[in-house]
Length: 355
Image 1: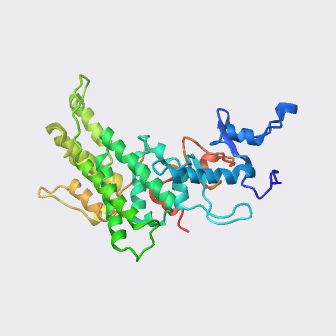
Image 2: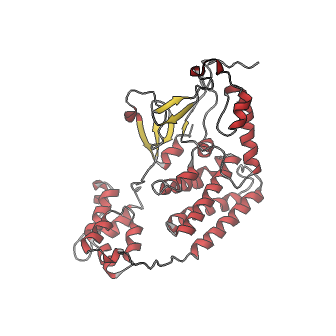
Image 3: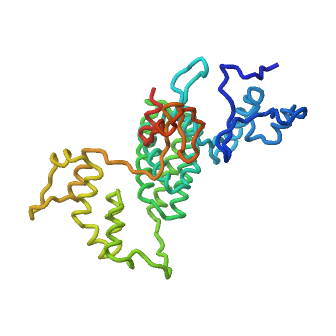
């Protein structure tokens, strides 16, 4: 008979988030009195996907998740958690460690791409994985990676937003796959070579669809960007942190083109992304004797990394060792939880699992 007590070596209690905060999930409620003896098997059957009866149902639940994913490769991986524990070594309480593939599977990236604040963050993370970490993913993580990527491409084709961002991602991914396929045998690939060839063909098809994408002009009676006063259009341009967004917007109308060539605008952009010491090393002066801030920006980005800006990111709790989305939170035991949180950039996310 399995031991159902709270052993000190167990992974801990099960927690649920309520309106009053995080509460421990109890299968036996003391408030029920004499009727507190529930049939575990009946309780498990009523809610197969959400209830795990500690050690009794743990093995069956894991097997069901694995079978569900193997039989339905077009769906996202079973886990859709808001936070995970990042374990880098074995302890007496926990055995094993958390890998990049496991973290990618368990965190809810499929829903994150529907959030406009997190879209750029997830795309950048997928791009970094494509460049250096693709072969380190397990088979299940690779399936989940390409399923999330497929949802991103479909979203861009439907919404007609951020096509340039996805083109860059697919270009890097196709380059990586070409190298892996060409050097098959020199590196370890998870899965049959035909699977990788099929993935490359799918990516090339997506690239063709994005190249043929025509942005439909929306004809409405509402106020457009061109109808706004010049000072308001100028303020909008000053809110941009990406140079190509400024250039592309400047191609819309002659007025926006004039505003996008403003020297002060490009000076602010350089000051936002780069340090003052870096300016002195690559100072570019125009024929009129003025600093060409636009040319300086594109010169500086060749030598120094740009500042990454995201509407929302994953956060890491130094006290608990938990990676989580900020709006969902996690059951933190620190006296001052906010002081333990740190924002995790896409590169930091990958570095967390380098051990």
